[in-house]
Image (cartoon, helix red, strand yellow):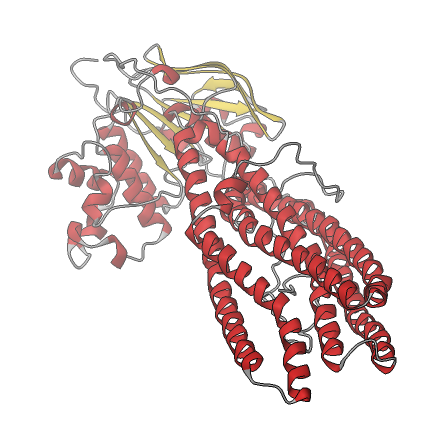
Length: 614
């Protein structure tokens, strides 16, 4: 029941054939901790509640029973083998031989069941924990989840669950290994007190050395995870603001910023593997040294007539079993990893779940207002007292850098994010007070990278609680310049989504059509035309002006052509609105031009005809 999975190479199977824990592949560190990179492990002040469900399940019970049977057979095996040898030398019967065969059969069966039950127990526990975390994440909603970095949240939902699932096998094997070590020392004492003294002369020293190396491994591994998380977080930040980085010509500086933790990561990686090498080296020396010491003492006892040949074999067997206690250090490390993973997932399971508001949304023209909005992300202020009004029936373009901040305004406008301070209202009603079922009908949105779900193209365009009629979907597709390429598909609007390979521009056009199809009072477009070529975008903008006449549009963009097509431009700078004016009035300002992707003001599109009620 020894372990050799990660760092501690355990003693090999002894002459008695004592069972060992099945070896598995080394588990690399995972980047699911976004703490500092100084290598200090954060203290877990309370037992994570996830250890309880992780240790449960029927396969955990099967594993415990199998390990109990294997442990019992392992402890009986040296004594029974010694008795069989003594009877064979004395010419006695074969009763003990039959018992030995039965015991070996039990040991083999128990080991086989344990090898199957251990991964099944871990897999079931990981699935159960991950399901709990995902359900809590969905119940908390995007507003609560947004307070946790996306990369960190994904890592907690994916990598931390298998870590927490180590609890059941680690606890079972730890208990079994400790029991075997204690019983082995007792058995050696019963054979001869000198044998136990010989064992204890070397084993505790080796155990202390290995435990020290395991602590170093834990320390380096935790630091490696946190540093790797910093790298991943920096890369995600750079990718989310890639267009701002390119526009400001700071690509080289951003690369240096993202890769800054790399030397520290390399040092921790070398330290990690060095400690594992040292642990394997210490264990490789300790096991034979202990066995040779016990063998020398036992041989002296046999020569003096105090022990028989069977007792000598039993002493060697119990020495090998006693060395299995060295594997307890690795199992306890698994317990520590399970606690760390459970602690990280506890943060997800304690995400606040806001009570569902019940206030209905009264009829209105779609006036959007943000008043004193403050949003903090990862300790920094992204929006600092933002005041913005999108008048009803108008088209307002929002420009600014970085892209992640302007996209944050889009998330606020559609209710995907709640402000830390301030209010966001639609027709005078705070979005946080509106029943969630009311918002999809009142607000529609399209993003730069839309996710298209549904069995067919038509299903993807009609996504929502109340899909628009077919004629409306096709009209929206024509407005978004998507109807032509849809009709060229093998089955047109009935083409399965799984059979499509769409370009970025085609996906954007489908996302734009999906946002235009409902009769929403407010349409939020988050850079939803950035992937279109100039001619297609110009045609789409002209059609959009016609289609959205009398409806309120907020278009987040960095394209000068889009800003020129809007009624007004809100220029966002350092978390606040710096100016609100027509695009051609702002164009002479060099700082304003710097946040756009180029282009010139050009002629304004002909305003769409207002509806009769405007």
